[in-house]
Length: 450
Image (cartoon, rainbow, N blue to C red):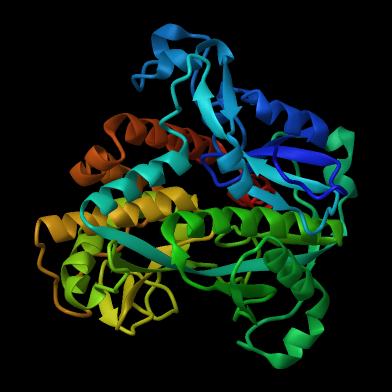
């Protein structure tokens, strides 16, 4: 039987969706413990896998003639159920006490169709498949996370919670800054923001995450968290735990955390998610980046435009790609360069293209498939800080267009998954294009929900 602290009363049966958000059902602890002995499964509506960032279902599940974008479409028809399943081994490794709610824990399950087949579009399975291909080549990936985000103090939520103003998505709360910004690593701001930073620290460590530093970032009310290196799948899990856990813990204390790339305010600084990565020999554990880096980097660059569809999945992220700022704007690399897409260091590569709204399983899988292509095809890395380097995509539309034509990703992720992903993101983009007030759309769609 699953071993759980006797003080725990409720288990949140959890799963991570396409957009990196945790979905859950709350169950009494005794029922879950007994159910695990009898092959517990928990039903969830299958449309949870078909939603865009507003929670609108992007496919017409009740119209079979139009619901044919991918081979397993019929299994989602009529909003049929999926099953979250567990086993004691999986459950023991994916059980997380909630530091901000001591009588509750997260227990993560895996989605299956009712016929017993795994749901291959589950993003965690997507990364597991990529890792398996990397292992076949003799390597394992190690990742370190460097995450920028914003925290605000909630000043007024009455309007957002007024039933007369209810909308889909809802209004975001009115907020104020925690620090005025433009003093990177300010110790005075660290002291000023002690209370919310302490909540972030306690949440990260309480979830078992390897937090190494928590810092004042450059922009107003902007922060950064850095985590130690671990294996790729664990790093992706940790990103999901951190972003979802921090938002919930801070909310209870009257703060609003957002992992939106560019919060909808003037003079704001964009947030990036810098993904540090290296390869090790799967047999010896020895670092092999010294001999693989040129071809690996060449692979990442070859798929840079398509990669942004996973690494930067929001409409606001593309405003971040500007020259002469601490963000990339071209598909380039440089030795310890913060202006390039790839900052190449002696034992690792830092990809600076990502934003913290990215689904970590897809972002990391995109690195594996691109890197493997570079190694297998023996691609030649272009010159450092190449003046002829092409620009990063100027919009999410451009990155999706690149993704739809990328043969390496079509093979790695599967054509069906790429079609499915692009359909959902284009559905989101169509709603954005139709919005009269683009800033209000961003506040509701991203700032209030991510």
